[in-house]
Length: 334
Image (cartoon, rainbow, N blue to C red; front, top):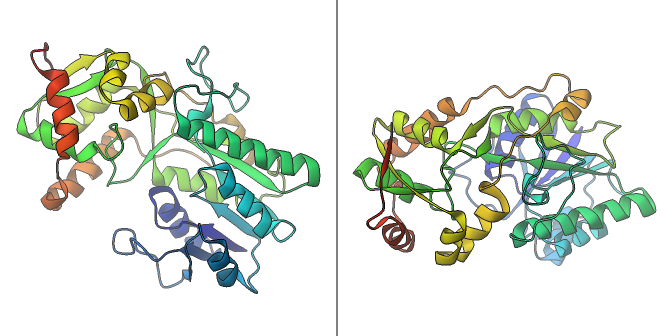
């Protein structure tokens, strides 16, 4: 099987490249050639260099190439999938779109979340864009049989990613925890959240590659472990051998102070997130999530402790956290 991964160096895609190659799949990565040092490819990986947002570059890179499967890990807006439709229509047996488990209507009214749970997210533009991408691709499937398979991952991480918002805030949170400074948790820290190790995601995704019955279908690929945010912080604190000082702030108040952070909370992380994976197991019976978060937390802390120069605080996020925690009661988690 020949597979093209658009992206290939990110948290999700790097694990998928490695596992696909281990299973004998011939993988080509379409990428600008960035981040090789962070998540390097093997000598087996073929690389096509192009800026995926430059259609002329992509067409030149793909000239004469043929693939059985295309997986786009970095399509975030409708125009991105429209370009993919133009490039791959009639040329692939399976096209997999990496969507998001944040696409479901908020607030979540019933658990667990199934692939049939209604879509809709009035809080977060990222999720609305993913929904629009899904609709465009499914319209192509219904109108012309375009062989799209939609995958909805939950919050997927590797050793580099701490699970805090806003985007890129993780090192700031961990640095503050190690310094004994307070961090912020939304609500009271009890809503359930699903974190999926990227190696577990890869088992699900690679199991779907080339599956003849998947076009027109949507799948969760998530861990079966759903933890309260208090437990997520506790796992990180124990891995870092510290006691976390936590200030609980309502999500709406956080949103008033930081619009980006608030959108990700109200549209995603402040909601209970428990996903049903039975559909995936019907198609990929061997799928199972093997990495609990306490183990993942150790990987994360070990990574940053081995490279302390990466544990850099963002001054803007520091200011927001200082403002939100000033004079507030502190809970201790450890």
